[in-house]
Length: 118
Image: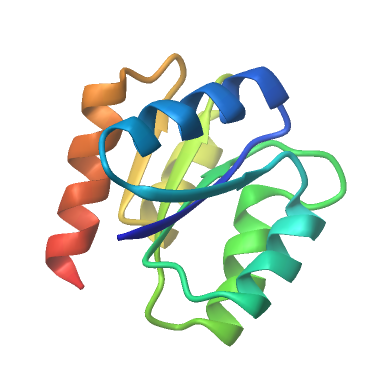
């Protein structure tokens, strides 16, 4: 399963990518929504894990742009300080919405569930 992780917190996203890779997933990561959009155009991912709040391009905006090019990709949103409105919007537009800090087990379970739905 090919995973794209996007979060503006570099230490968090790089550590998460390393841990998911150790569990056998093929993971690419970036700290930029703009860069993630470029990556998604050049590679097929099964699941994208997106931070809701990022500079320049939010997780919701990024999901919409990627979905236009990759309609079969599944999405999981992460947020450390989302509002109730963000939670409702995220739940409506993604397979899952997780609140940071996220345990690796919870994230793995959600990724696996997305893979089963595909």
